[in-house]
Length: 395
Image 1 (cartoon, rainbow, N blue to C red):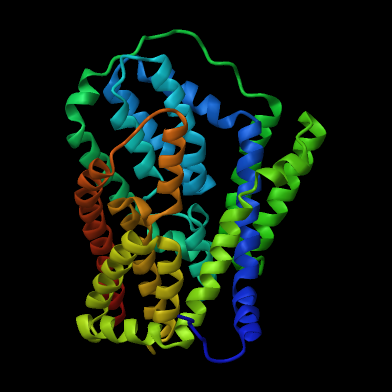
Image 2: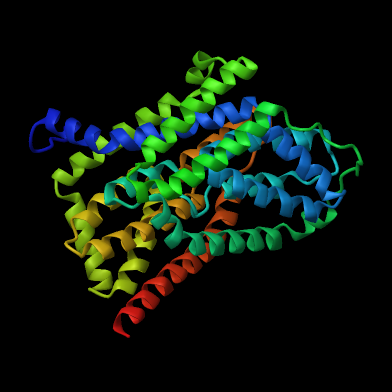
């Protein structure tokens, strides 16, 4: 059976590429910066610092690993957090037999599927934010508190679920001071701080996010080559080009489905569930995005929901709010089923490569309640922000 889209196929591809060009440049730049930072030894040193600071206490190690991972995911994207931290944690568990593996492995998984406090923390955020014209600072202002609440609730839920394993975990204490960061690693940290600051301030001076990120990535790569011999060709080979093909291909497909009327039907369903109540729209949009992400992956869901919201006919302000709601659902929803996100698929693949098998049933058993709690609380915070802004406008 063939699926035929109305209009010219070339027009469909052309419009999709036009929408995605700048977001894809941003995503490639983030991947390049992550690869350079990895070669600089930043992530290995971070894990060493976490292990030393834990002082032999499994509970403290879980706390430090979770929040160090949250910071890593915020600055270097969620997929990078999985790709970098999962092998390091597997290595840590192999060399420290006193640790129960599941709490720390699920901590890394959940770190990669949290509400993103920064637009650069997840590729779907970059695409959706660009589509609705949401800049770096505006995104952070709206999403910081939903992200914080989602992270805290997820941490507490995992800590409670694995309380026995975490309490029983022990690791040897050490007074050994980790090697200090190399000059290039310190330079990487400083430049990342400058890049994030520029991303916040760029829209205020007419500097788009893709320009900030691509310039920062190019500068990091140039300095890495000159100072420590990092190969630009090697970095280019490390970029997940298959992920970018996945992103572009799914967006073209979803754009075609929009032409076939699917986004209009979804919009009608959202309107039926919520009416014209902004708070109801927030919860219905976020919940639909979460369930759809769990069932058919968060990438196609994010693009389809973005196009649906764009076709709803609501005000630009409410469009932006609903974009945040759909991203909350898209960031959290994948934790309910293994197929929900690329990060989860990567997590399973890396674990298999290290000889670790996690049953899908256990994934679902933990993921569904943890996700629903975090989803409800994060959407409630977003709804509270909407209510307070509307209240302030009426005063």
